Picture 1: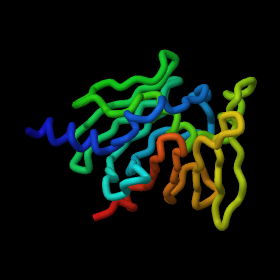
Picture 2: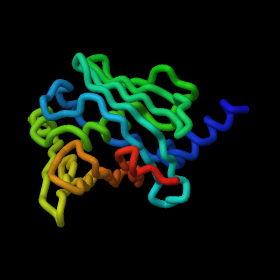
Picture 3: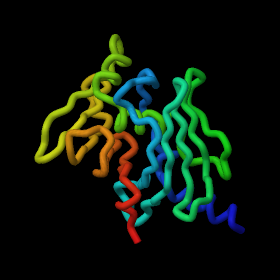
Picture 4: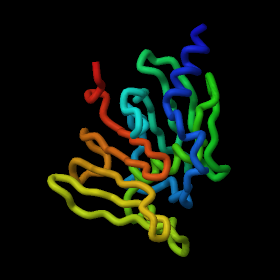
Length: 189
């Protein structure tokens, strides 16, 4: 019964993503950058734009070590749903309670776009159709991820620091989902 409830929760997490065309995935940046996160515990919220009531808040621990990104994703009660591993062998899910309804490469690329320094992304994307630009906005900044002329994602930062106590919000224009990466203090009751 518990496994069925978790499966239903994950299916609702990104209802519609599975029906979309395969979302774009950019070349991966070097996973050893001095300004990239090391280990961060964050609240990860994923919601479809068309149904914000179906948002799912999950706990995540992001760890960057030995040229790899590992993200453990759990329910708010602490039950591990899956682990995302991204390294020289590509992005994949391990230790899954149930198969997530989205590709590992989709989640890995969106986290990298949000959490990696701008110069690391643009260095990885040299010679490709991908680019990232940032502009100041209000008391923060906005990062736009482009594939050719198409804006694939818009990321909003509430201050100038990459990792901070302020939420980071990514709007995925291809899949029409919003991902928020926030400190645990941002957790809704």
